[in-house]
Image (spheres, one colour):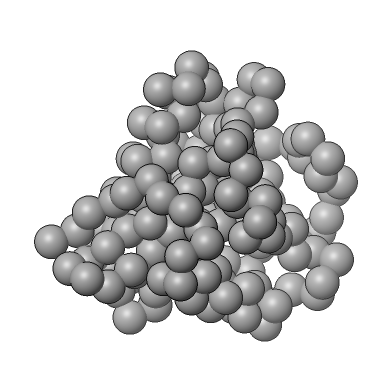
Length: 149
């Protein structure tokens, strides 16, 4: 049974997923195009870190970072062995709900152009392309997206 919980990114299960995501991202993009948020930054009070569980196994994660007028999605990842089971969709629903509970009316994200499955997921969830936001600069390897809640 799938469950999503808001929890600390410091626990070993979360660290394992974040390490796997880092390895994956580093295999696709040069360091200057990897906009990774550290585990310590994920533990900040303005961040809701979500962990997806199938039984006793942590299989996915995602976070939202609250900003003044939107929340940014960070660290979205599902274990490759568990993809195709609705985990990413459940994580997206959980982070959208958490954002709305904080009074946030829009979500934004940055993803890489070499991740067609992630881009397709975001488009299915109602995200559209936008210009760079926050501290991001234009990057030919980045795709910026947004969605009103």
